[in-house]
Length: 547
View 1 (tube, rainbow, N blue to C red):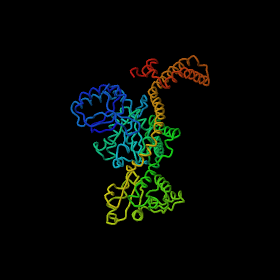
View 2 (cartoon, one colour):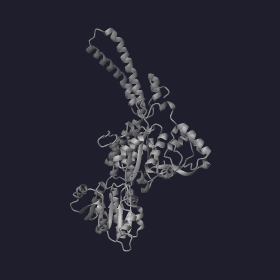
View 3 (cartoon, rainbow, N blue to C red):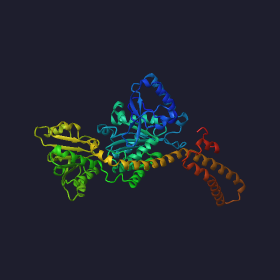
């Protein structure tokens, strides 16, 4: 769902759609703008007129375009209040608490974020969080009473918050509060760039992300390692020595992230989606191949190249530069040791290593620079370029390709006649060809992911039976213990060892008697005929029969 209103968003379950649909129709004359609601089944449940379909940037998805309120009228506010009342949790459920343990009420997954498809790099960089701070941000989210579990995934092309909550409406409100505080953006600036998906849509989105289907470069492998890192951080214990908080994933989110990692590996093994795939770094080199003849007047192989940064992206840059005939490179980094280690991997290239205090001298001596650092601000600005002489007539031409988020190079650098600056958003023209070639592989991967989605949903559905299982075990264990205690009066002649044998015997009988009911409650429900939790409670006289 793209949020294009300053009013609080509504997350509406199927049961509440009819009421909301009638309210929307009643005030339809007040509606302007558009929002995307990927809840086709919910729309059908409300029996609304078929909305128009619009193509989604997420590949094979189709989204529904519906009007949304821009300036709420009193009628709309009334409808909103009715809808909120329809989706508000029961007062009794509030006592369960968000951290579980009192009835084991697990929430549903929700993802809120933005990506290269919904936001420009200028917006993405304001929300970006370095990997070492992911758990700190997740802990801040989990501190809200409405959020049970949380995890953060922040890369150069996306920023996504994954949470688990029982009241998705209230949790969305709190996530948006966190995003506003973190980014410094007002709602009017932030909301048009966000997407929001819940439950199965959120699960499928993460599966697609991990498989590389939602990437700028379809099939690229780096996103899988980033999702794996998200999972590792999310389930990690606290590290007091390093000052890192524990991960904030619990049973649902931990399982979801793990399923996404497994799905990403499975799709790549079963399809050719990753065969010959390009990465952000290779796309940057391809962009250089396209642009250097016009921008610099020489082909890439003849350009004097400088790479700033010595991380994973820079390693890939050097690999693809070498494959395109570049033999001489100036490599800059904050520390010499890491740069030397990287340079040693390319014995056939003439790599000169320098530190960051040599940046401007190195830029004067090169034609083309790639920037890929972890700096949180711009290391190349228009003002600095002017001060260094690039604003003067006859200044040497310089092309800079920045693949960092947050950006390392100001976009205003393009205002100088002798400078051409590109960022990750400029790579889209390169990857369009790659996406066209991989369309068939994407469809194959989607089929496999639907099976993985069904597996997770089936497991998720089984969670609602966990309280019933616990209550059933507790009730019959209490009966067993009471009967043994009664019989103990008649068994005074038995030794302690004999009494232990009685305990083991009765517990064994109880386990065997409960084995079939427990297996049934833990089983999947492929045809929808499994007894409801309420029916189970009524049958065994456990729990709250109104559930």
